[in-house]
Image 1 (cartoon, rainbow, N blue to C red):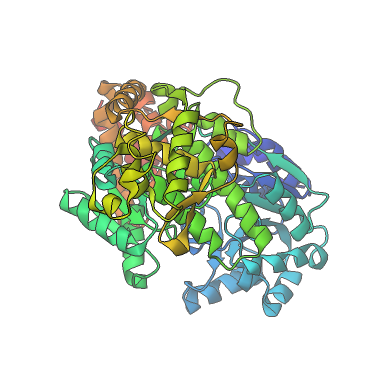
Image 2 (cartoon, rainbow, N blue to C red):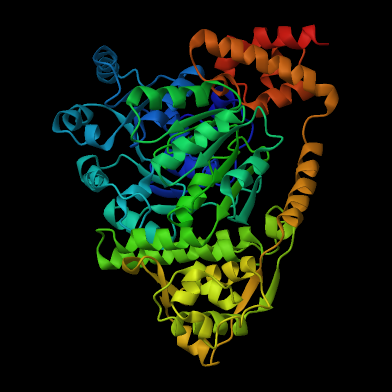
Length: 603
């Protein structure tokens, strides 16, 4: 007889209530049903398979490509009193032997494995002799060629249904549009599985996208006043990662680089510091992040454009997993558009996959260029409608004007055409402005009818016009001709006056900063009252002491959200402590006395 999910939710995880669709998913799987689950990063996805595995007889097998996630989740589960283990390439032989023995003896509740390990013939034979509670296939978008992180080894997981009939299978992902979800069903043999799609909204994250001017200076301005906060800064190249990390370190921040070209020891050290210390900023390529379960990341910054809107959603979703206010900030410019389109065009993917990649990039560019609510655009891509503007993004906090840019677009297109479509944006803008440069004179472009025709706008405004035309595909960039601007789809219709085009008017940085500052002050007012701050900091210090004693990240002991509730409620005994969200039976037994002493000392 399966155990009651609500009772285990309280006794093991310390929570009185499920979040969102969690209860529907859990009860469906406990009854033996298959499912496809889409929950945003930080939405409580792991509970959807951890809790059913505890309710059902046998061991729950969790398939994941993310070794870092396995390590963190196994340690977090052990802190809750759950018998959990992992098998992957980073596990020492003696530990692997203990895990195999526990699997044979039937003492494990959950076992995390990589797809390669799971699909080995010997391992499958062992599972055939083992009572199984469920299979949870995490990061299920990896099975789809339409997903943003396709992994061929995931294709073999389709065999599980035939090999283990009657064992419920759950495919889970944080980012999958309808096309990707349909592909997951087909490739994993889950055609009859019930689909659970949560809201993709993360209302605690504030989105801000700024025109790229001097990205380091802009990053420094964004980070001002963020001392002691943990965050991630994403860059596209390894060299930029190292340069930005060194620059931030020179500014007095604890900033560490992370990319695939570093030695494994250096990557491990950076990741451990990020997980176990407060105030660490990791500057990284996308090699860093998947599987990082740190709940108190207060910001994610992009100095280069992500590959797609799915990638942006997943990467920014690493901020604020604890539900507390967090920020997603990005600096974006024309070079980002050019670079990302070139990477798709020059890649080895089939033409149909490239078409999908361009469409997903176009969706991200639409998010960058929108004059409306960014959250409405982001959610709309995933098929979700937000009725009202969110009030928690830069375009809501500092509204954007639009203008009829048809004439400006015609001027830009005329300048591209009359210069032979052989020059990049800087030269075209010089022609439009009537700039008397050596290059303009040498080419004879000072004698063109378009020379100086754009003097009504300044250089910054023309950069914006060309960037938005490129983002819309009206102009293209010839990579083989050193970045020359050429006509794209719809260019001639605009030039002939058959199509009008509206654009956003880029705002002064001061106006955006003022709106964001007002929002930050509002968020700060919602945080702990000043009277509770000293106790909260004392509880954090105790948490850090206990974590260091055990060699685990502090959030594995308790999340910040739990410590905040302790500071607010000030429990006076074990019974009151047990009522604090996030304090289950195992953690009450292990840590209750220590934290009660801190609270009593501060009374």
